[in-house]
Image (cartoon, rainbow over all chains, first blue to last red; front, side, top):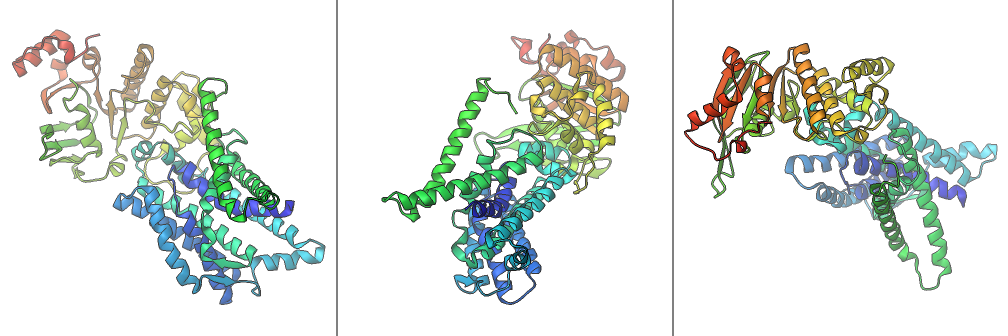
Length: 301
Length: 265
């Protein structure tokens, strides 16, 4: 149970890190995520079934997600479409694209060599269970990505992306094109989301066009739960918050699933409602904290 | 160095709200000029800055910098030569980021590459520069800029802008939102930096004394036009009374209250 909570927390945590970049760093609420997540899964599955190299497929999933994010940013930049709508347009476009890539609505990966089956094959002889191996792999994966992000957001480009979400006029005054930054930032974010989708397909042993439905809620909830943890302006702490937030979120969801089995009038289809409820509670919590801070009870960040 | 030819801009053209915000502006600004600009609200001072910086494009006329026509160049492209400080002290810095991050972003203008430039050497450099402000900020490199006071943020914005060595700086009432003590401090720093780096400067102010005291050239604006342009010895000899007299002379109009035009404190 703990293994699967942590494994899923880290797996979807990669997606949450992507959501963190758009919603928090860039202040660009991006709903492309619901399309780029299954896009990553679809690209991965399609290439795995055809027998391509595992790592090439993963890279292509990242590239696909990045391009989807870039499309959203370009729609927003050039056609002045509000960012929420631009994301929705790309998301719906991707539904058709994903069906094309998969060929059918559902592709099974049960008898295919995947990254996870290789990891398990590698760790099994030294006595690790399947759950344990997956958990270790996902922890490793998310911390590699966290490390790359932590370094990236300390570079000149990364700092500038951070300032964009804070004060766009400042960025323009520094001679940087904010449109280009949005393309880079939203692209990178969706690249991460697609990687998360690609790994999810292997974890669940299938890719499905409906895989990403409402996934943005999980990402947002993780980011927001994380914000209740460590107080810092350092990127390393912020990304750690997101990862821990994602693990907590999946722990809570695991509990909710158990509760649904126990409580007679609830059904498994109510899970989405539980997720939304959780986000609403988090938002209320954020508001309450802001209120407290304004009253001066808490030191501002 | 900067020249504006026949600049006009019309807002809401073809509607009942049509407004000729700038009309027939012809200016030539030489390197090293320190120009102060006065005029009532709606005279077109900020619009003039918006035209020079590229926030707005003029309806007609051309803007050129060093003989290059930049009339249609995007604001971010022009920003490589032009530094601008707004009245709002929050506009120049990113409040959710640390002081050192803010300084790193503004250290060099233009596109930023994914390279790690912020190191101990840079921190040392930032600390040395921050000491000039004499606000103790050199010991707060890792604090969020959002924790600083308005005066500190505006002084920091000024320093950050100066470090990037722009060819022209535009100061849009940059001390108006500060308390008198901080306003004097920021203005003093401005004067210090302008001299130290021989910066070409345009400064909008509502304070007639400041307009007279600082700079080597003065523009008076009214209803979208530069109605009075004075420099050199004549500028040095200006007094408040002379300025007000000049305004009436040019406009043949009497104001009940000159404070509508200019504050005299």
